[in-house]
Length: 234
Ligand SMILES: Nc1ncnc2c1ncn2[C@@H]1O[C@H](COP(=O)(O)OP(=O)(O)OP(=O)(O)O)[C@@H](O)[C@H]1O
Image (cartoon, rainbow, N blue to C red; front, side):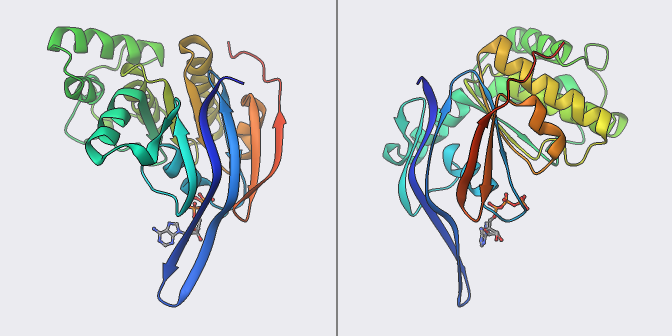
């Protein structure tokens, strides 16, 4: 398999006071390139922790995490930062937008960190916003956008970097059914048309039918792993 992400016997615990919680227990999984993989499971089962380790935000206690063939533990902090800047995009539940910036400026910002010149960044950002259906909303600030539109700005911001890896943590949980549907269709289309590997963590059952593959997690382990044969979104 052409694996973009590999978890190899990952373990992770958190200790708060005298209480130790084993969050991941000897978890191994390979995530194929170019697919939308959904990690589902009850609250607290370790989904976000798995995503944080595979995206290099968090170090495991045991086992290894590989992204695009790179053993993340072997990267020094600055190298890891560069790897994440160049190869990964993130979409979070809370959108993480800057209140004072327009949709276009939000999307341009990380392109500036990548060193793109202003005109190229502007064009790429406008293209990404058009791709998520916000071509006519470029100048609006977060307060002027609906929840679904804000999440689509966040997706455009991740997409404009043209990352090989896109991580989404509960991207639809703050949205109503219709907007949640648009967001998941958009993520699915990104996986198909951009060849990006999308790893999405959610306990939203609406998402299951839209993923290529669903990993059901419980108590720090993968309990079930199934392909869904999801249709290509329109
Ligand atoms: N930094 C931390 N310090 C202490 N405990 C933590 C930390 N991060 C996560 N945990 C604990 O680890 C467990 C798993 O958390 P995680 O966020 O991975 O679960 P989840 O499946 O994503 O849950 P949810 O669906 O509610 O977001 C929880 O019990 C949580 O309280």
